[in-house]
Length: 221
Image 1 (cartoon, rainbow, N blue to C red):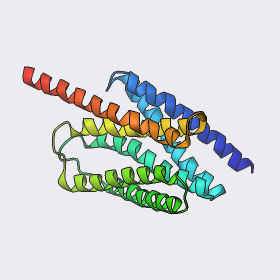
Image 2: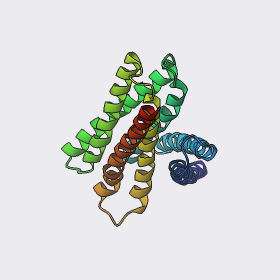
Image 3: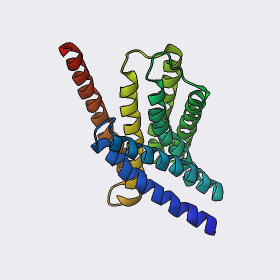
Image 4: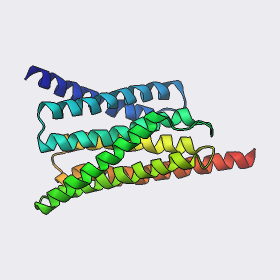
């Protein structure tokens, strides 16, 4: 089918654009013009990746594409929430209906991924472990965000740490998608989970480093 083929190639192209734009955003000065430009391209590319993944599932609703569609929702949420938090820098900027809806969809995706994981493991398929991990991450972040929406920001720079970790989480998903297709020399579980295992501690390290920098600047002032 021509439409399906074109959608697949557009999906792949957008994935490569997200991969390089995300790297550019991390490599450039935070808040600078180039950082913002790379960030906009990254967000737009990831939005297209997610929409096209859902379209590919519509063309051929097999279990693999169903799983990938759920992962697309899961991964784009991190990018979307990392972008949206920039509009809530001030303490009185409350989450809107868009934020609540997106978080609800993430929780639903987490439930779906968890259910798929349990079903696969019961069928003796080890890949169910990957689904359980992604489902657990999605559900944990979704419920955490719902609680945070009700409680409000806990510190003035909460938006910065959220932006850093959410965009980083979305980029981990981008690298995971790339590795799952191209790093065929690795076992399946390694291709799907290694970016998360490596990337998560790195994001935590960056968040701590910026926190120390901000605290040092406040103390000096």
